[in-house]
Amino acid sequence: MALLNILHFPDPRLHKVAKPVAAVNARIKQLVNDMAQTMYDAPGIGLAATQVDVHERVIVIDLSDEQNELRVLINPEIVWASDEIQTYEEGCLSVPGVYDEVKRASEIKVQFLDQNGDAQIIDADGLLSVCIQHEIDHLNGKVFVERLSSLKQSRIRTKIAKQKREQAATVS
Ligand code: K1U
Ligand code: ZN
Image 1: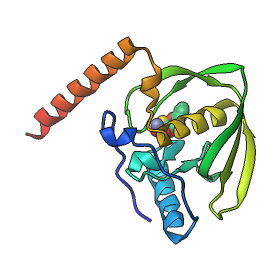
Image 2: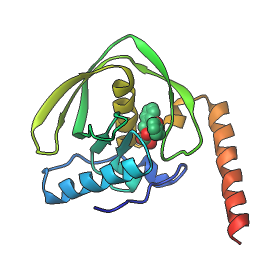
Image 3: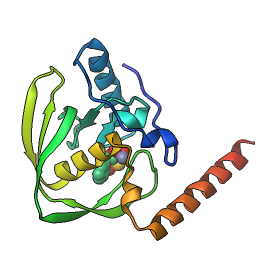
Image 4: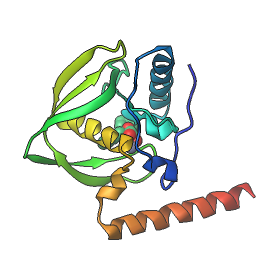
């Protein structure tokens, strides 16, 4: 297993739209293992392949405190979403230090392939629903900050540019 490099906003590679996985083969299983290790190490509760510069439709999620309930969603499709909306304060491993409230469907029904290539369908609500929608956004080239107002986005871009300047000054 390997730790993968996580891309940081505003890296343009975060805006690529990921392609469907054609076959759940040994290469995809290795990618899943590497993504899980990278998510646990970060630590985070989810990771999309886009964030590690692999533009294929693979997501890993683990909401457990013990990091022992890994969920793998390959080619996920939301086949139903509730009209009811929930608001959750989201974070993102590609935008460290930024947390803000995002509104999304409360409940979703998602179909996908698991790590064995078997078709699955699940109903998700609460944090699982938020996390799946956040990760599918990544596969579609969208970062959660792009769901915020343009004023908030502009403040976040300014904060990130300042952090980069400060980091550059400390290493030189
Ligand atoms: O996709 C990502 O960048 C991962 C992201 C998932 C997510 C979190 C919250 C709402 C929606 C999606 C994260 O994991 S951010 C880190 C985080 O939430 C966390 C880290 C350690 C312990 C508990 C949570
Ligand atoms: Zn994210």
